[in-house]
Structure formats: C-alpha cells, structure tokens
Amino acid sequence: MVKPPQPRALVVPPLTPFSASLEVDHALLGKHVDYVVKYTGATMIVAAGVETQEYHYLPFDERKALIRATADAVEGRLPVVVGVSHPSFRTAVELAQLAESIGAAAIQLLAPLRPFGGAPTTAELVRYVELIGKETRLPVMLYLNAGPGADLSPDATLELAKLERVKYLKESSRDLARVGRLIEQIDKAGHAQYLTTAQMLLISLQLGGSGATMPPPVAELGGKIIAAFSRGDLPEAARLQQQLSLFPALWMHRGLGPTMKAALAALGRGIGEPHPPFGTFTADEAAQLAGHLSSTDLSHATSHHA
Image 1 (cartoon, rainbow, N blue to C red):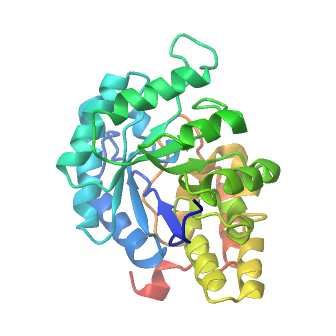
Image 2 (image 1 turned 120 degrees about the vertical axis):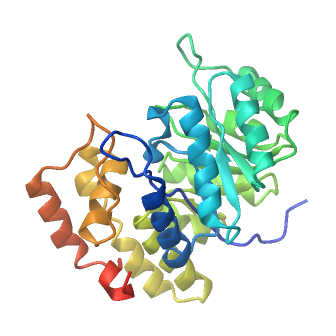
C-alpha cells in the first residue's frame, strides 16, 4: 500500500568546533546548535552522524560526549538522530543504546565497507543492519555515501529500505536517474522516507521525495527552498535552488566540511577551522567565498543580532 504524504524533512548535522588543543569546544557547539535550530528550518538534528561533523577524529569516549553535548544543546526543541556508524556492529549497538538513553528519535547508520577491504554483498549489509536493529527499539536512518561507505546498487538499496527497522534512507549520489527511481520504489511505495542532498533538493521534492540532509549554513537555503515549495511558490524555490549551483561546488576541492566552516566564518557565524591537516582554505579562497556569499540568501549574524 502506498503511504500518505510525509512531512517534508530537513535533517541538519551541526558542525563540530575544536579548541586549540583539538578538543570539542562545547560552549561554541551550544551556540552553533542554537543557530541551526533557530535559523535553518531543520526538522531533525544529527548528532555525530556524518563525515562533515568530523566525529571520526575523536576517541570513542569523546565521540559519545559529542553526542550527549549535541542533544543537550538541542534541549528537546527538535528530534535528534544519533550517528552510530562503525564497522563493528557491537560498537554500533553500544552507540544505539546511548542514543536510547538520551531520548533520541532515531539512529543514523552508514552502510559500511568491509573492514578487511572490498565491497560488501547485499546479504552482508542486510545482516549488519538486522544485527543492530534487533538490539534497539529506535528506527534506523540508513546513510548511503559511497567512499566513506559502500556503493550500493539501486536493487540493493531497495532491499535494505524494505527492512522493518529502516524508516529513513539518506543517500548522497546526486544521480538524478537513481534518485528518481528510488523515490518511486522506496518513498512513494511506503518503505522509508527518502532523503537526498542540497543539490538534489528541489527536484527530489518535485518527484515526491521526503527532503534532504545538509549541513549549515547551506541548510538555511534548504529550509527556504522547502518553505517556498510547500506554499506552492515554485519560481522562488527554483531561484533559491539555483544558488546551490555554484555554492558549494566552486570550493568543493577543499571538501564539504571545510567549505561549510569557511562559509560560516564569512557569514559572521564562525566556529573555527577544520580539524588538521585537511581542508584549510587559503586567504584568497576565503575572500572569494565571502564575496560570493554576499549575493545569496544566506543570513549574516549581524542581521539577526546574533
């Protein structure tokens, strides 16, 4: 049976600020989460769940502390999705149990590569999700990002989406043919809410998808696109979506996380540099980015007296 329309989702992962000693700056994290909750239009917040959050640099205890600190900063204002990704299903289960203990709404789970190398089979991934799912009552947001995780075929993706515990499926392919097919077979067929990326947001909504996951500050544009689409203002939604044609694409040689941190700094909402040694912007790149952002609908901190 085809499910009724679901609320349009904007799932936002706050970025991680680091101190000079490369520990998480919890005070700055709290201010950043406030900005995300108040100004992006997020419907769910991700705690330590995607690569742009740089959680993989942290020792395990600090990763758990980041999860708790993010949930504490949200203060119940929005549902929290906790990242539990790990090659070991037992470690993922431990994180899922932490998620339950702090009142999370769901867990996010990257479809993993084989720890010993090579692509997993569909059967292995089904088993992986099932082993974790049977140890938690929380729904799973399955995360597909080829590179850090496995590169799944559409058929394998559909099989995983049909698992009872999987209620959301977020993927990063940016492949329109794939996105259109899977929206039909997964979201509109009632298996799971299908989420794409910033670049695919408007077309995903038009095709019947549920929304997208994207980091701040680009999530501000995502929230505005969803709002315009929801009120039937397609020209405005398209105008906003066009802003995502150049940003962040022109700076993606530095990586998504570093580009978002540089953009936040340009907007007066800085939370520091990316974790070394990767992704640092040159002064010229930062200036070019700041100049470009002045022509977008992203808000500067001064406009909100932040």
